[in-house]
Image (cartoon, rainbow, N blue to C red; front, side, top):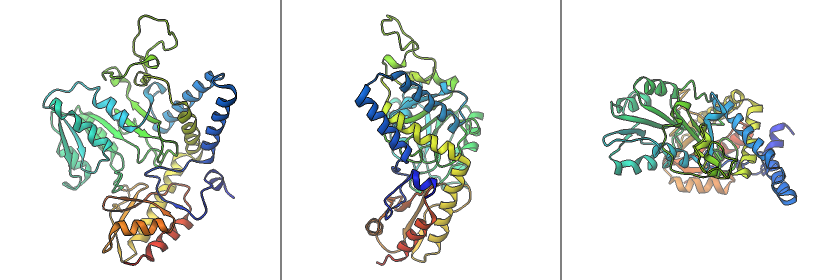
Amino acid sequence: MNDTDVEFPLRPDLIYLNHAAVAPWPKRCAEAVQRFTQENVTTGALNYPRWNATEQQLKQRLVTLLNAPSVDDIALLKNTSEALSVVAYGLDWQPGDNVVISDQEFPSNRIVWESLTSRGVQVRRVNLHSAATPEDALINNMDARTRVVSISSVQYASGLRIDLQRLGRHCRAHGALFCVDAIQSLGALHFDVQDIQGDFVAADGHKWLLGPEGVAVFYCCAELRERLRLHQFGWHMVENSGNYNADTWTPAHSARRFECGSPNMLGIHALNASVSLLLETSMEEVERRVLENAAFLLEHIAALPDYELITDTTPGRYAGIVTFRHRSAQQALLHDYLTENNVFCAPRGGGVRFSPHYYTPHTQLHRAVEILAGFTV
């Protein structure tokens, strides 16, 4: 048994191809939760200072994962939607301002911006196929009133990977803020927030980061932290959070200013363990294997005459998501068939979505393709 088998003792008959939805936990994540649970049962919060140290350790690991300049740039929030809401409702919008997004966004990165229309903000949903490249399409829809470009690093349904470096460079040169929903790439691909010149980055922990739901990373660049108006307040987000008797207060200068109340310590312990596995493996190696698995599926599914790919097969345009459709059958029937044959995947983007992680063995990918080949209308 290799290290991967030890960390991911999944049911042997289950082919888990749904990391773009909710990932299974590695063993060390479960063990961290068990230890934390037992500690709560036997000693309560006796060792709370050590819990705080675990929170700081997670933030430091996320600094490494993002290549953020400082741990002060990192906040731990509930989910991606909360992080995007912090940005959307923190900025000082003026009537006539616009935000540029794509027509392929998950609702988290669409609804929050659409909610600003009552303030006179225009939301430009750009067809990513309307120009030579997705980046051209987004850039063509920017103008002098564009305040924010908000894009998913990898589109959840099609699996399209965006050139974040190019977009970030253009936004910086033209005075627009660059916001990235990284939930479909962080933990699957190498990520460098400084290289892409990102202003804001958000990602839940329960997909490629292999952690639980209920805890997410939010990166905010230092120069913008105090420009975001706060809408949530509490004891945790003040500069001197340990002084409960103080009559006056100021928001923390670090990104802790966005964490209004008590942290999700259970989720923090779990995600800290999962991120430690990714960093021990190295994100370069994780990315290599993720792309290798995706390329395998793209090649072998394309060879099946009854199927067509939705995901772009161009190198650099795909990540861990492979979406495809049957040429004649109802996609719901295909998904039901796969589920009945223990292939856990998702109906997305008018087809079926496979999303293996770095540890998914090729034997299971071979088996999934064989099962696809056996589907009959």
